[in-house]
Amino acid sequence: MGELLHFEDFAVGQVIDLGSYAVTAQEIREFASEFDPQRFHLDEEAAEASLLGGLAASGWHVCAIFMRLLADGWMNKTVSMGSNGVPEVKWLKPVYAGEVLSGAVTITSKRVSSKRSEMGIFQCLFELVNETGEKKTEMTAVVFMRVKAAC
Image (tube, rainbow, N blue to C red; front, side):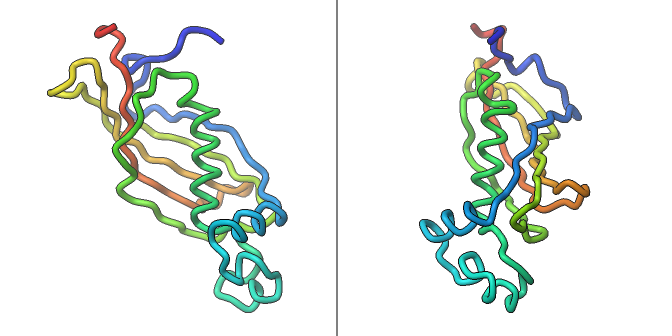
């Protein structure tokens, strides 16, 4: 792997493609049985009779899928310093078994910390869409990244 990317390597408005992930019924059930054991995440009939209209991933499962895409597609290629949170998560549409999700990050603002000059701060929009372009999940987040000039 080449040199890791720093705060200066990114621009406001930049969109970072995170790749894609195919969601399976088996993993929907496995995640739900461990972390979100509601019937509509575990049982096809219950799911079809619910507001979801079919077996759908837990919102927390969708966030975990996004985190994997984020780590593989961006964070592990940078000198990320973590985050202080995700202030907003929107599960806009159910994620069904068989869908292929694609992730993206848009950098909406950036600045250097006034208290820690080695730390850059990004405001980001995180999005997951399915293979037809239907937006499934949207999150806003803060990402901290090392400033190269401070190294």
